[in-house]
Length: 266
Length: 238
Ligand SMILES: Nc1ncnc2c1ncn2[C@@H]1O[C@H](COP(=O)(O)OP(=O)(O)OP(=O)(O)O)[C@@H](O)[C@H]1O
Ligand SMILES: [Mg+2]
Image 1 (cartoon, rainbow over the protein chains, first blue to last red):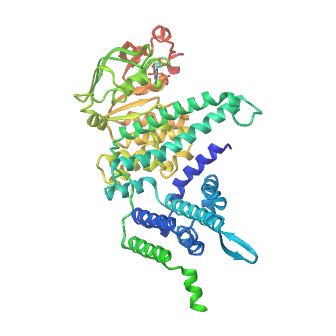
Image 2: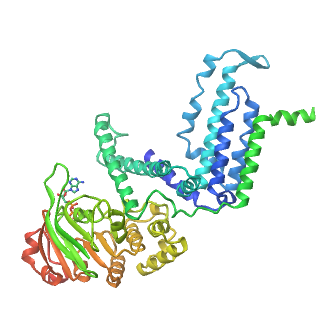
């Protein structure tokens, strides 16, 4: 299987993950969305040297995955192509910020190294949280929930179509690379001389397919509303869960819990 | 009733794909649309729900197809696309089947009940909760037809409904279609199916209407068919 095809299966498998059942799946889309947004904002707001405080934040997604009955490994295996990109963001920090921050034994640890690690962790934690949301919530349900809180139609339709468009695009890539490799045996990848036409064709074909899909939706009465989505009822329990989680996330931001616990004992 | 009046259409920068096509399909009539590859069958169908904007007039149940009436026209018309991959966009077959009815105001329960009836008629209840990307090409074709039947449209347009179906599914499809009391326009190269279902046949070639008459007459006319790159249906060729 080529890369595009695998990515395709992964993306479609998200739909399958999202239609499983678990306590976390059963929470209302909006409460999950709220938890995820609050978590991402708070995690991103940690100070660049606050490594210990940040480390504690991993606990929230980990608990979430437990309640969703999804092994955390699924997230890393599906996002294996994205995670290095996210992690690479902080790579230059050690070169700019050389002031020593603390010592481990006789080794000086510079501020740059710490901020690099916090930045990487922030990226990875946020990915874990977004993946959890996508893996437990159908895209149509989420859009429906967003419409309920008066999110503009344009934005929800855009989210939906982007999601669908990505799968169409990957579909076309894998179809075309397959067709290509069938007629270019023994060749690895696509020869550089064919790249131009390949990309041009890809663009045209995807646009056609995406248009067909959009037309198929219009023909069946789609008007930017998501009545058709099941939309789990927003139960009191979901809001309670959201409230507790958000409270805990915000507390963890302002109280360094590892330090606090240590201080209780020493 | 479905009326085409002097319908002409050209794709940008090409010769006309439809030229002065005029005919009407009466309420409850099932009409076959035949013609060689590139004759203009799909193009003609796309003009009905306004996916292509043709010159001339098309009327659907007394309503002219134009920008203002588009929503209402689309509500009356069910269209099975030639390519089922473009037709199915939800994760599961059942999600796709209730998409249309719920958009048009049915409750989820009503839509699901309707969908279940259609699945049963077509004999594909086992596909109900399957994922669209994990079913075969023919199964997807059956599911695509089911999504349109579930909307209960007044007028059905079907583009190659029987292609890639095995004999059993093809038979189930033919029986279902025959049992439906709806206005239908069916484009197909499966002339035996057309003969079985349709009372009337329209023959297109090069975007022009060549013949319009009783299915039994046109499909028996070897000379006419061969002159337009078609062959007698198998059941009549002995
Ligand atoms: N998107 C397009 N752009 C330009 N020309 C097109 C396009 N689609 C079809 N055509 C041309 O319009 C004419 C009619 O095509 P159409 O798809 O209606 O044929 P058809 O009768 O449905 O054929 P088939 O039996 O192969 O499905 C053909 O000559 C075709 O080349
Ligand atoms: Mg066609």
